[in-house]
Length: 141
Length: 81
Picture (cartoon, chains in turn green, cyan):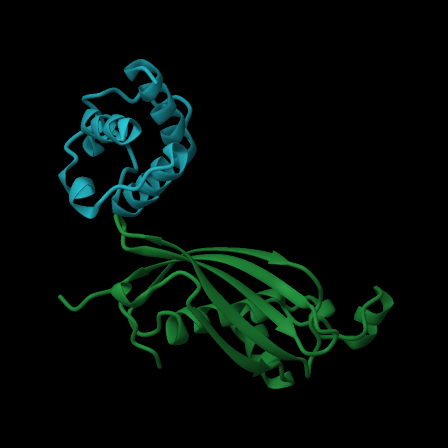
């Protein structure tokens, strides 16, 4: 886990990691969220609606923004304060996702940073969702 | 920008941040006068003011502001720089 402080931040600072979407992650997300919509659980239902298979929860692929902020950028000292997500295209089970965040703005007066983030799938090579994230910093009291 | 126009522009930022166009922000207004003006809303307000006027406050300035009038003083000063 990274332990960056506000003073370590610079424009363009970038962190990235990869994650694979598995059936187990889908089942756990379903259990936690209670979202039992068949689009995410029934491949026949999903195909009938024009998808290649059961669609991964958008909020599951977006959940890795929490990891991006809390583990990588800035890591341990992070306090996630705002997240605006744009869903671009569907993700399927087995997809390998690359989650990336870039520091786009640093606000000295409020000790917050703005991160431009994206989730990109190896399959198809395109972005599946993007986010603007605002992050503050915790300090030892 | 005149002081009056500045206050009007600041009012518009408040309306946006607090999602309340009935707010009548005056020079003597403080956080205690506005329902929902908590610490997180204050941070959002400061950043939106920075964006609106294309300025940057220092942390000392933010911590030292006692009312909206003092915020206007700093914005006006930045505009002259």
